Image (cartoon, rainbow, N blue to C red; front, side, top):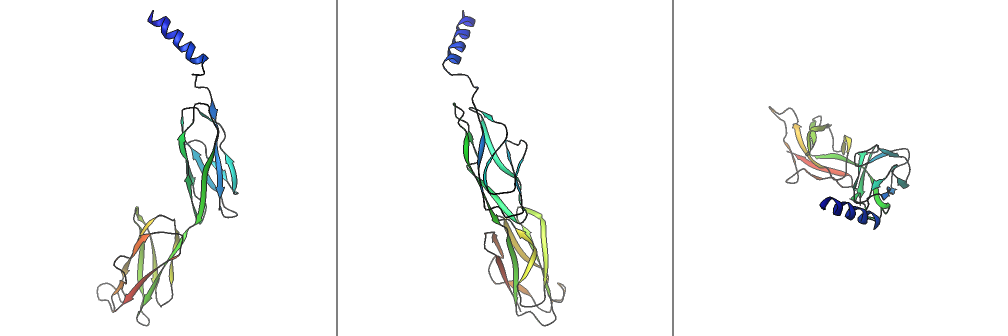
Length: 201
């Protein structure tokens, strides 16, 4: 009797629309991608879609109703960082298409060092480190009062720090000691170019 009731209930549920057969497509809008660059997106870790122009996009294939979707950037464009808003959720029972995934790109940020009072003919070397990836470093050697930029661009939102790795004249017997003018020479990268100030004495 239990088997019959279960079969009848399943048939009734299917007849009332209880099946899980509705599917939805996933898409949205890309903004501010620089000309001549591309960004790649994946949904639920599937095959990437590579975009080369701003505007609307839609992933191939579909997602079943009541199933989840998760859109992420799988490959950033050169010189930019793209972020996703409204990229995850669950498809409703009726399988309504998702069209509001928003992907926006911003230019990566240059970071430089400005040194004051460095002696004539002396130089000081700095290392910039990304806090979430200590092995990811970059160095720059400064010999004058101009802003000297590291040969990398930083992604917006990254945590960074800058430190002296070689004082003027060498660390063993420095002719001067250069130190950051603020308590902490680092922070969170924004879209505004960064200049870290150091003073030598």
